[in-house]
Length: 296
Ligand SMILES: O=c1ccn([C@H]2C[C@H](O)[C@@H](CO)O2)c(=O)[nH]1
Ligand SMILES: [Zn+2]
Image (cartoon, rainbow, N blue to C red; front, top):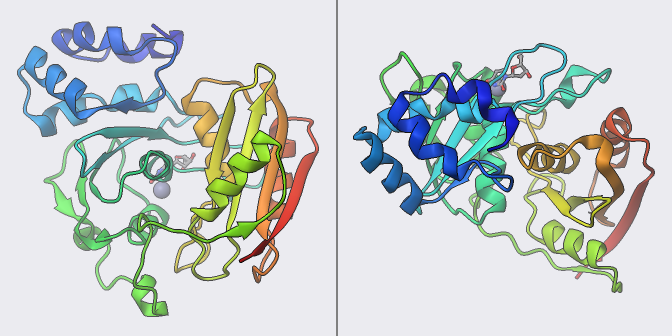
């Protein structure tokens, strides 16, 4: 089992601790599939909602909050029945807006894993206004059920009444809808090809700046993040932040980053290069490779 889970395991009911330890091997990065979840339920005799809340200390152990030391854990449950954990990240010495919230981390985890609907979000602290707005960008966002430790489960529409969202800007294909934006680039560099692929699947309906980041560690492993815009603009999730959050879930240290690539569209009305460089430089002394590709 990874050391980072030691303290959280001690907080779990004994039957859950025993059943989950085998899943927390060196490759565990916060994904539990529907079958594994059913086995956990069987071993613990818990109702599903109860089990999901009980798993939050495991999600919170994925956090990297050097500024607040406040560990937030979240779980996004997809329509497939699989669950995706996420946790907050703060970048040392950088402006606070570079932070990633646990809910964003869990949602991006589900999105990168191919989920097309998120039905439930379970979180250990009440979701802040910015997260409520981020959730509202999702397909059927107002219906996402929010589960909190000492509250009755309620849909997002309860937490965010009179919401402003994609439909106010005439977007009817919200976040998690399959995106396919062809970008043309001639390269046989596998890392660039991976980034291009993710940029094509990114969500940028407001600026058309289809963009993605891939980070590579010295051992050749890669971690990606796609751009996910928000109708209220500020709560958008930057691709660098999403990639860092992917790395953190995989228990990799940011100092292990060896190469970093940002690909964005030549026709976007904004560029993410400045924001991506600021975030990257706060964690690793690496130059950002910035590639601009033409949309088809
Ligand atoms: O909904 C919330 C509220 C806060 N945080 C994180 C952000 C920051 O890292 C820390 C303190 O706000 O908690 C979340 O992850 N989700
Ligand atoms: Zn939040």
